[in-house]
Amino acid sequence: MGPLAGIKVLDLSRVLAGPWAAQVFADLGAEVIKIERPGAGDDTRAWGPPFVPESGMSAYFLCANRGKKSVTVDMAKPEGQALIKRIAAESDVVLENFKFGGLAKLGLGPEQLCALNPRLVYCSITGFGQTGPYRHRAGYDFLMQGMGGLMSVTGEPDGEPMKAGVAVVDVFTGMYAATAVLAALLERERSGRGQHIDLALFDVQIATMANQISSYLVSGQQPTRLGNAHPSIVPYQVFASADGYLILAVGNDDQFARFVKLAGAPELAADPRFATNPARVRNRAILVPLLEVLLRQRTTKEWCEALEEAGVPGGPINRFPDLDEDPQVQARGIFNDLGEGMRAVANPMRFSRTPADDTRPPPALGAATDEVLAELGLSTDEIAELRASGII
Image 1: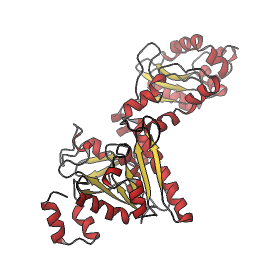
Image 2 (image 1 turned 180 degrees about the horizontal axis):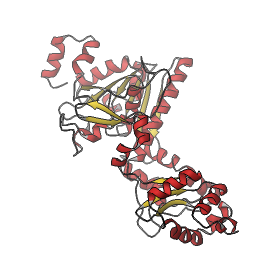
Image 3 (image 1 turned 90 degrees about the horizontal axis):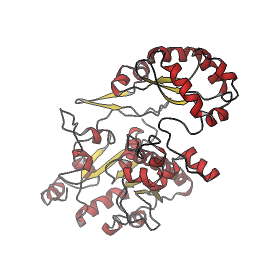
Image 4 (image 1 turned 90 degrees about the vertical axis):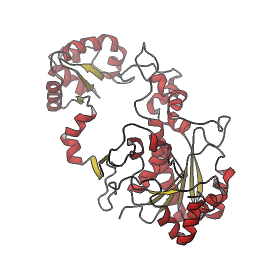
Protein backbone atom coordinates (compact mmCIF):
# COMPACT_ATOMS: atom_id res chain seq x y z
CA MET A 1 0.00 0.00 0.00
CA GLY A 2 1.12 3.54 -0.71
CA PRO A 3 2.01 5.98 2.07
CA LEU A 4 -1.32 7.80 1.70
CA ALA A 5 -3.56 4.72 1.74
CA GLY A 6 -6.77 5.55 3.60
CA ILE A 7 -6.80 9.23 2.56
CA LYS A 8 -9.76 10.28 0.39
CA VAL A 9 -9.37 13.26 -1.96
CA LEU A 10 -12.27 15.00 -3.68
CA ASP A 11 -10.80 16.50 -6.83
CA LEU A 12 -12.95 19.35 -8.16
CA SER A 13 -10.14 20.72 -10.30
CA ARG A 14 -9.49 20.56 -14.01
CA VAL A 15 -6.80 21.28 -16.63
CA LEU A 16 -3.33 21.01 -14.98
CA ALA A 17 -2.37 22.60 -11.63
CA GLY A 18 -5.09 20.97 -9.53
CA PRO A 19 -5.11 17.65 -11.39
CA TRP A 20 -1.32 17.48 -11.07
CA ALA A 21 -1.60 17.75 -7.29
CA ALA A 22 -4.41 15.20 -7.20
CA GLN A 23 -2.37 12.77 -9.31
CA VAL A 24 0.44 12.97 -6.73
CA PHE A 25 -2.07 11.82 -4.11
CA ALA A 26 -3.36 9.02 -6.35
CA ASP A 27 0.19 7.81 -7.02
CA LEU A 28 0.88 7.77 -3.28
CA GLY A 29 -2.11 5.56 -2.54
CA ALA A 30 -4.95 7.98 -1.77
CA GLU A 31 -8.41 7.41 -3.20
CA VAL A 32 -8.95 10.33 -5.57
CA ILE A 33 -12.49 11.00 -6.78
CA LYS A 34 -12.41 13.33 -9.77
CA ILE A 35 -15.67 15.19 -10.41
CA GLU A 36 -16.27 15.94 -14.09
CA ARG A 37 -19.02 17.50 -16.15
CA PRO A 38 -21.45 14.96 -17.63
CA GLY A 39 -20.89 14.58 -21.34
CA ALA A 40 -17.72 16.67 -21.67
CA GLY A 41 -15.57 16.07 -18.61
CA ASP A 42 -12.30 17.85 -17.89
CA ASP A 43 -11.46 20.37 -20.64
CA THR A 44 -8.19 18.58 -21.35
CA ARG A 45 -9.96 15.41 -22.51
CA ALA A 46 -10.40 17.28 -25.79
CA TRP A 47 -7.00 18.99 -25.87
CA GLY A 48 -5.27 17.30 -28.76
CA PRO A 49 -4.04 15.74 -30.90
CA PRO A 50 -2.32 13.55 -30.03
CA PHE A 51 -4.86 11.07 -28.68
CA VAL A 52 -4.27 7.47 -27.59
CA PRO A 53 -5.49 5.45 -30.59
CA GLU A 54 -7.07 2.62 -28.57
CA SER A 55 -9.11 4.79 -26.20
CA GLY A 56 -9.24 8.24 -27.79
CA MET A 57 -7.88 9.76 -24.56
CA SER A 58 -5.81 12.91 -25.04
CA ALA A 59 -2.13 12.83 -24.14
CA TYR A 60 -2.72 16.03 -22.12
CA PHE A 61 -5.37 14.39 -19.92
CA LEU A 62 -3.18 11.32 -19.58
CA CYS A 63 -0.29 13.32 -18.09
CA ALA A 64 -2.16 14.45 -14.96
CA ASN A 65 -5.00 12.04 -14.16
CA ARG A 66 -3.73 8.49 -13.70
CA GLY A 67 -5.07 6.40 -10.87
CA LYS A 68 -8.22 8.51 -10.24
CA LYS A 69 -11.90 7.62 -10.14
CA SER A 70 -14.02 9.69 -12.53
CA VAL A 71 -17.51 10.62 -11.34
CA THR A 72 -19.75 12.75 -13.53
CA VAL A 73 -21.90 15.23 -11.60
CA ASP A 74 -23.62 18.42 -12.75
CA MET A 75 -22.65 20.71 -9.89
CA ALA A 76 -24.70 23.57 -11.34
CA LYS A 77 -27.87 21.77 -10.17
CA PRO A 78 -28.89 21.50 -6.51
CA GLU A 79 -29.07 17.72 -6.71
CA GLY A 80 -25.50 17.62 -7.99
CA GLN A 81 -24.33 19.97 -5.26
CA ALA A 82 -25.96 17.70 -2.68
CA LEU A 83 -24.02 14.70 -4.03
CA ILE A 84 -20.73 16.57 -3.86
CA LYS A 85 -21.46 17.62 -0.28
CA ARG A 86 -22.05 13.98 0.65
CA ILE A 87 -18.69 13.00 -0.83
CA ALA A 88 -16.96 15.96 0.88
CA ALA A 89 -18.43 14.93 4.22
CA GLU A 90 -16.49 11.65 3.93
CA SER A 91 -13.32 13.13 2.42
CA ASP A 92 -10.03 14.24 3.93
CA VAL A 93 -9.11 16.70 1.19
CA VAL A 94 -10.84 18.91 -1.39
CA LEU A 95 -8.79 20.29 -4.29
CA GLU A 96 -10.37 22.93 -6.52
CA ASN A 97 -9.23 25.56 -9.01
CA PHE A 98 -12.36 27.56 -9.77
CA LYS A 99 -12.24 31.34 -9.96
CA PHE A 100 -12.39 33.22 -6.67
CA GLY A 101 -15.81 32.74 -5.07
CA GLY A 102 -17.06 30.45 -7.84
CA LEU A 103 -17.78 27.41 -5.69
CA ALA A 104 -19.10 29.48 -2.77
CA LYS A 105 -21.99 30.54 -5.02
CA LEU A 106 -22.86 26.86 -5.39
CA GLY A 107 -22.66 26.16 -1.68
CA LEU A 108 -19.38 24.29 -2.18
CA GLY A 109 -16.89 26.89 -0.99
CA PRO A 110 -14.40 26.37 1.82
CA GLU A 111 -16.57 27.84 4.56
CA GLN A 112 -19.55 25.69 3.61
CA LEU A 113 -17.71 22.39 3.19
CA CYS A 114 -15.40 22.91 6.18
CA ALA A 115 -18.45 23.61 8.33
CA LEU A 116 -19.93 20.34 7.07
CA ASN A 117 -16.67 18.46 7.74
CA PRO A 118 -14.44 20.25 10.28
CA ARG A 119 -11.54 17.85 9.58
CA LEU A 120 -11.52 18.74 5.88
CA VAL A 121 -8.38 20.18 4.29
CA TYR A 122 -9.71 22.41 1.51
CA CYS A 123 -7.14 23.66 -1.04
CA SER A 124 -8.13 26.45 -3.43
CA ILE A 125 -5.90 27.11 -6.44
CA THR A 126 -6.59 30.38 -8.24
CA GLY A 127 -4.72 32.74 -10.48
CA PHE A 128 -4.16 35.46 -7.91
CA GLY A 129 -5.40 34.13 -4.57
CA GLN A 130 -8.29 34.88 -2.25
CA THR A 131 -7.19 38.46 -1.48
CA GLY A 132 -5.89 41.48 -3.33
CA PRO A 133 -7.18 43.60 -6.25
CA TYR A 134 -6.55 40.85 -8.84
CA ARG A 135 -8.41 38.07 -7.01
CA HIS A 136 -11.35 38.07 -9.44
CA ARG A 137 -9.13 37.60 -12.51
CA ALA A 138 -8.71 34.26 -14.23
CA GLY A 139 -5.23 32.80 -14.16
CA TYR A 140 -3.36 31.08 -16.97
CA ASP A 141 0.16 29.69 -16.91
CA PHE A 142 1.34 31.81 -19.86
CA LEU A 143 0.09 35.02 -18.24
CA MET A 144 1.75 34.09 -14.96
CA GLN A 145 5.11 33.48 -16.63
CA GLY A 146 4.86 37.02 -17.97
CA MET A 147 3.34 38.80 -14.99
CA GLY A 148 5.45 36.91 -12.42
CA GLY A 149 8.80 37.80 -13.99
CA LEU A 150 9.91 34.53 -15.59
CA MET A 151 9.74 35.83 -19.14
CA SER A 152 11.78 38.90 -18.23
CA VAL A 153 14.81 36.67 -17.70
CA THR A 154 14.09 34.01 -20.36
CA GLY A 155 15.17 34.32 -23.98
CA GLU A 156 18.10 35.70 -25.93
CA PRO A 157 19.41 39.15 -24.94
CA ASP A 158 18.39 40.71 -28.25
CA GLY A 159 15.24 38.63 -28.74
CA GLU A 160 11.71 38.83 -27.41
CA PRO A 161 10.85 37.64 -23.88
CA MET A 162 10.25 33.90 -24.01
CA LYS A 163 8.09 31.51 -22.03
CA ALA A 164 9.24 28.08 -20.90
CA GLY A 165 8.34 25.15 -23.15
CA VAL A 166 6.21 23.52 -20.44
CA ALA A 167 3.49 25.02 -18.21
CA VAL A 168 5.94 25.27 -15.33
CA VAL A 169 3.75 27.53 -13.19
CA ASP A 170 0.91 25.00 -13.23
CA VAL A 171 3.24 22.12 -12.42
CA PHE A 172 5.02 23.99 -9.62
CA THR A 173 1.66 25.08 -8.22
CA GLY A 174 0.47 21.48 -8.26
CA MET A 175 3.52 20.42 -6.30
CA TYR A 176 3.15 23.31 -3.82
CA ALA A 177 -0.50 22.30 -3.41
CA ALA A 178 0.45 18.71 -2.66
CA THR A 179 3.06 19.86 -0.15
CA ALA A 180 0.66 22.26 1.55
CA VAL A 181 -2.09 19.66 1.82
CA LEU A 182 0.31 17.09 3.29
CA ALA A 183 1.45 19.65 5.86
CA ALA A 184 -2.17 20.42 6.78
CA LEU A 185 -2.98 16.71 7.12
CA LEU A 186 -0.01 16.28 9.44
CA GLU A 187 -1.09 19.27 11.53
CA ARG A 188 -4.60 17.82 11.66
CA GLU A 189 -3.18 14.82 13.50
CA ARG A 190 -2.29 17.19 16.34
CA SER A 191 -5.23 19.58 16.30
CA GLY A 192 -8.02 17.41 14.92
CA ARG A 193 -9.04 20.27 12.64
CA GLY A 194 -8.80 20.89 8.92
CA GLN A 195 -8.18 24.26 7.29
CA HIS A 196 -8.38 26.25 4.06
CA ILE A 197 -5.27 26.59 1.89
CA ASP A 198 -5.09 29.63 -0.41
CA LEU A 199 -2.66 28.95 -3.26
CA ALA A 200 -2.13 31.33 -6.19
CA LEU A 201 -0.35 30.74 -9.48
CA PHE A 202 0.97 34.31 -9.33
CA ASP A 203 2.50 33.79 -5.88
CA VAL A 204 4.09 30.51 -6.94
CA GLN A 205 5.61 32.00 -10.09
CA ILE A 206 7.30 34.76 -8.11
CA ALA A 207 8.44 32.32 -5.39
CA THR A 208 10.04 30.00 -7.93
CA MET A 209 12.16 32.77 -9.42
CA ALA A 210 14.58 31.61 -6.70
CA ASN A 211 18.07 33.09 -7.09
CA GLN A 212 16.97 35.50 -9.83
CA ILE A 213 14.44 37.33 -7.64
CA SER A 214 16.84 37.10 -4.70
CA SER A 215 19.51 38.83 -6.77
CA TYR A 216 17.10 41.66 -7.51
CA LEU A 217 16.08 41.98 -3.85
CA VAL A 218 19.74 42.17 -2.83
CA SER A 219 20.99 44.48 -5.57
CA GLY A 220 17.94 46.36 -6.80
CA GLN A 221 19.02 45.51 -10.36
CA GLN A 222 16.81 43.72 -12.88
CA PRO A 223 18.61 40.59 -14.19
CA THR A 224 19.03 40.55 -17.95
CA ARG A 225 18.07 37.84 -20.42
CA LEU A 226 21.11 35.69 -21.13
CA GLY A 227 19.69 32.99 -23.38
CA ASN A 228 21.13 29.70 -22.13
CA ALA A 229 23.84 31.32 -20.01
CA HIS A 230 23.77 31.57 -16.22
CA PRO A 231 23.73 35.00 -14.53
CA SER A 232 26.11 34.00 -11.74
CA ILE A 233 28.29 31.16 -13.10
CA VAL A 234 30.62 31.06 -16.12
CA PRO A 235 30.97 28.90 -18.18
CA TYR A 236 27.50 27.46 -17.62
CA GLN A 237 25.64 27.41 -20.91
CA VAL A 238 25.08 25.75 -24.29
CA PHE A 239 28.00 25.58 -26.70
CA ALA A 240 28.18 24.44 -30.31
CA SER A 241 30.28 21.33 -30.93
CA ALA A 242 31.62 19.97 -34.22
CA ASP A 243 28.30 18.27 -34.96
CA GLY A 244 25.66 19.83 -32.71
CA TYR A 245 25.38 21.26 -29.23
CA LEU A 246 26.22 20.36 -25.66
CA ILE A 247 25.84 21.83 -22.19
CA LEU A 248 28.95 22.81 -20.23
CA ALA A 249 28.12 23.37 -16.57
CA VAL A 250 31.32 24.35 -14.75
CA GLY A 251 30.40 24.91 -11.12
CA ASN A 252 33.73 25.81 -9.49
CA ASP A 253 37.31 26.85 -10.20
CA ASP A 254 38.74 23.32 -9.98
CA GLN A 255 36.31 22.13 -12.62
CA PHE A 256 37.27 25.07 -14.83
CA ALA A 257 40.95 24.21 -14.54
CA ARG A 258 40.26 20.59 -15.45
CA PHE A 259 38.12 21.64 -18.40
CA VAL A 260 40.60 24.05 -19.98
CA LYS A 261 43.39 21.48 -19.54
CA LEU A 262 41.20 18.93 -21.29
CA ALA A 263 40.45 21.47 -24.03
CA GLY A 264 44.15 22.14 -24.61
CA ALA A 265 44.24 25.62 -23.11
CA PRO A 266 45.45 25.23 -19.50
CA GLU A 267 46.79 28.78 -19.51
CA LEU A 268 43.24 30.10 -19.22
CA ALA A 269 42.98 28.81 -15.65
CA ALA A 270 46.04 30.85 -14.66
CA ASP A 271 44.81 34.03 -16.34
CA PRO A 272 43.62 36.41 -13.57
CA ARG A 273 40.66 37.38 -15.76
CA PHE A 274 39.39 33.79 -15.60
CA ALA A 275 40.97 32.18 -12.53
CA THR A 276 37.91 32.60 -10.29
CA ASN A 277 34.21 32.45 -10.98
CA PRO A 278 33.56 36.12 -10.10
CA ALA A 279 36.34 37.07 -12.51
CA ARG A 280 34.87 34.83 -15.20
CA VAL A 281 31.44 36.40 -14.73
CA ARG A 282 32.94 39.88 -15.08
CA ASN A 283 34.88 38.85 -18.18
CA ARG A 284 32.20 36.65 -19.72
CA ALA A 285 32.31 38.54 -23.04
CA ILE A 286 36.03 37.81 -23.41
CA LEU A 287 36.08 34.20 -22.18
CA VAL A 288 33.05 32.72 -23.93
CA PRO A 289 34.28 33.40 -27.51
CA LEU A 290 37.59 31.69 -26.62
CA LEU A 291 35.73 28.65 -25.33
CA GLU A 292 33.45 28.57 -28.35
CA VAL A 293 36.48 28.01 -30.60
CA LEU A 294 37.77 25.19 -28.39
CA LEU A 295 34.43 23.39 -28.13
CA ARG A 296 33.94 23.29 -31.88
CA GLN A 297 36.98 21.00 -32.17
CA ARG A 298 35.17 17.81 -31.09
CA THR A 299 31.77 16.19 -31.54
CA THR A 300 29.15 16.26 -28.81
CA LYS A 301 29.71 12.57 -28.06
CA GLU A 302 33.46 13.03 -27.84
CA TRP A 303 33.09 15.98 -25.49
CA CYS A 304 30.57 14.22 -23.25
CA GLU A 305 32.83 11.21 -22.86
CA ALA A 306 35.89 13.36 -22.18
CA LEU A 307 34.06 15.58 -19.69
CA GLU A 308 32.72 12.56 -17.84
CA GLU A 309 36.22 11.09 -17.53
CA ALA A 310 37.63 14.42 -16.30
CA GLY A 311 34.85 14.95 -13.77
CA VAL A 312 33.55 18.11 -15.44
CA PRO A 313 29.75 18.46 -15.59
CA GLY A 314 28.42 18.43 -19.12
CA GLY A 315 25.98 16.59 -21.30
CA PRO A 316 23.96 16.42 -24.48
CA ILE A 317 20.68 18.16 -25.24
CA ASN A 318 18.39 15.18 -25.63
CA ARG A 319 15.20 15.04 -27.61
CA PHE A 320 12.41 12.85 -26.24
CA PRO A 321 13.30 9.89 -28.52
CA ASP A 322 16.83 10.06 -27.09
CA LEU A 323 15.37 9.58 -23.62
CA ASP A 324 13.66 6.39 -24.77
CA GLU A 325 17.08 4.93 -25.57
CA ASP A 326 18.95 6.40 -22.59
CA PRO A 327 20.36 3.67 -20.31
CA GLN A 328 19.71 5.74 -17.17
CA VAL A 329 16.07 6.21 -18.13
CA GLN A 330 15.78 2.48 -18.76
CA ALA A 331 17.53 1.54 -15.52
CA ARG A 332 15.28 3.82 -13.46
CA GLY A 333 12.09 2.69 -15.19
CA ILE A 334 11.11 6.29 -15.86
CA PHE A 335 8.57 5.42 -18.57
CA ASN A 336 5.63 3.22 -17.55
CA ASP A 337 3.30 1.13 -19.69
CA LEU A 338 -0.24 1.73 -18.43
CA GLY A 339 -1.89 -0.61 -20.91
CA GLU A 340 -4.34 0.16 -23.72
CA GLY A 341 -1.62 1.87 -25.73
CA MET A 342 -0.81 4.34 -22.95
CA ARG A 343 2.70 5.21 -21.77
CA ALA A 344 3.42 7.70 -19.00
CA VAL A 345 6.26 9.11 -16.93
CA ALA A 346 6.72 7.35 -13.60
CA ASN A 347 6.35 9.20 -10.34
CA PRO A 348 9.88 10.33 -9.39
CA MET A 349 9.35 9.72 -5.65
CA ARG A 350 10.96 6.42 -4.68
CA PHE A 351 10.00 4.88 -1.32
CA SER A 352 11.84 1.95 0.26
CA ARG A 353 8.76 0.41 1.96
CA THR A 354 5.59 1.99 0.52
CA PRO A 355 6.12 2.41 -3.21
CA ALA A 356 4.05 4.72 -5.36
CA ASP A 357 1.34 3.08 -7.47
CA ASP A 358 1.82 4.97 -10.71
CA THR A 359 0.83 2.29 -13.21
CA ARG A 360 -2.96 2.73 -13.08
CA PRO A 361 -4.39 4.40 -16.19
CA PRO A 362 -6.48 7.56 -16.15
CA PRO A 363 -10.20 6.87 -15.93
CA ALA A 364 -12.74 6.87 -18.71
CA LEU A 365 -15.24 9.67 -18.23
CA GLY A 366 -17.68 8.77 -15.47
CA ALA A 367 -16.34 5.23 -15.10
CA ALA A 368 -16.63 5.21 -11.29
CA THR A 369 -19.90 7.15 -10.95
CA ASP A 370 -22.08 4.19 -9.96
CA GLU A 371 -19.40 2.74 -7.66
CA VAL A 372 -18.85 5.97 -5.71
CA LEU A 373 -22.54 6.80 -5.40
CA ALA A 374 -23.32 3.27 -4.23
CA GLU A 375 -20.69 3.70 -1.52
CA LEU A 376 -22.61 6.81 -0.40
CA GLY A 377 -25.65 4.59 0.12
CA LEU A 378 -27.62 5.38 -3.02
CA SER A 379 -29.67 2.53 -4.44
CA THR A 380 -29.56 1.33 -8.03
CA ASP A 381 -32.93 2.98 -8.66
CA GLU A 382 -31.79 6.29 -7.19
CA ILE A 383 -28.66 6.26 -9.35
CA ALA A 384 -30.75 5.45 -12.42
CA GLU A 385 -33.10 8.35 -11.64
CA LEU A 386 -30.18 10.78 -11.27
CA ARG A 387 -28.81 9.62 -14.63
CA ALA A 388 -32.19 9.97 -16.32
CA SER A 389 -32.52 13.55 -15.05
CA GLY A 390 -29.01 14.50 -16.24
CA ILE A 391 -27.57 15.07 -12.77
CA ILE A 392 -24.93 12.42 -13.36
